Amino acid sequence: MILYYSSTGNTEFIAHQLAKRLDDSAVNLLERIKTNNMSVLKSDKPFIICSPIYVCEMPRFLASYLKKAILKGNRQIYFVFTSGGYSGIASTLAKRLAHQKKMIYMGCADFKMPRNYIISKRYPLQSRDENKKRLLGAKEKLPLVAAAIKRGDRLKSRYIFLFEKLITLPFNPIWVKYKQPDELFYTKDTCIGCGKCARVCPVNNICIKNRRPVWQHKCNHCMACINACPVRAIEYRGSTEGRELYHINKYVNKKYL
Image (cartoon, rainbow, N blue to C red; front, top):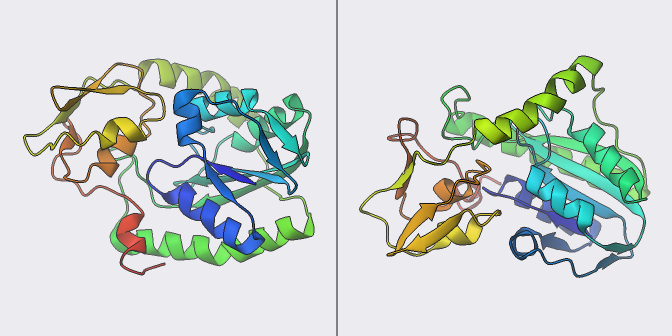
């Protein structure tokens, strides 16, 4: 069983592509996370966790959910990460999570995908050509990863140096606490009050009041709300005005994949 969370489609794409190649099911964890649904997940095949990378780690809300999730059946667990090019210490933390759940850690695979972190100019989005290149590269890698999982091989992730752990372990919680404000999100008059932003928020940070979204200061900067808005009505003051947003559907729908 493939369990995934995805904000702008990168991880969802990888999860469903793996499911096709492994004749397995792909389960979107979004609603389970939002509602704290801890009903049993049972699989005769190995579990495969597909996750994006936020600040060099698996998203904390996803890791927290997985720690509590009840996984029955097969005790092998793989991890597949999607990132803008650097997965940080995610594999180390994934191995720790597997051991905490008394499961057999089967390694990690990394997929380099287009960036979606639209609100920081420190991390510029790539050109459309670069996005297509990354997506096609990921698609070419998929059969290799799927074949290894089907054979029951352990996936080999890159070596993580000690200095990466020493820097990232304290850095991530500080960034999450102080560098993810949501006060600068706002909606334009084009907002249609559809509520999609609230539905895609994994931490229930958005409520709809008077047909407009209101952010409640527990944002994880997943970028789901701003990138998924069907009418481009959400902006982040000083960062997103006039910039092209990213969602994988722009490429899937045009048959680039």
